[in-house]
Length: 115
Image (cartoon, rainbow, N blue to C red; front, top):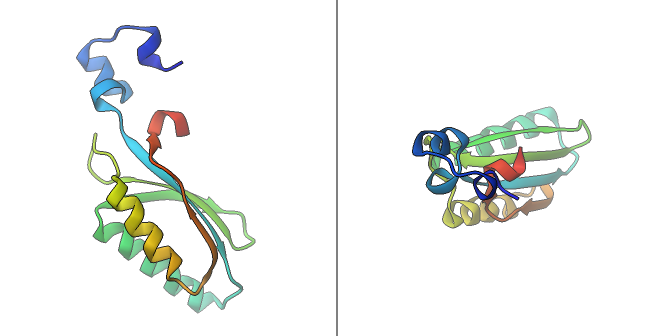
């Protein structure tokens, strides 16, 4: 049950809690990378960050040290959501990268359900 379903909140609190009309949508990215040199890995990461930033998105996540990465992609603008177009753009770019053995881009979800 969401916060809004259990309690009526005034506009200020809805904004602070990112609920109601202030809900922010994000999507998850999961990557399995191929074995590669450090230089190739750094180039891939730089290019991935460039694509994220060019689309006015931000990325947070981590790897487990075995070529796996999991992250969350969100809009760089406060109170703005990532869009289906953003999701498809990132998915298409990742699918074209030879460094990725596997790339999964999740559906848009409420940020409050992720954290």
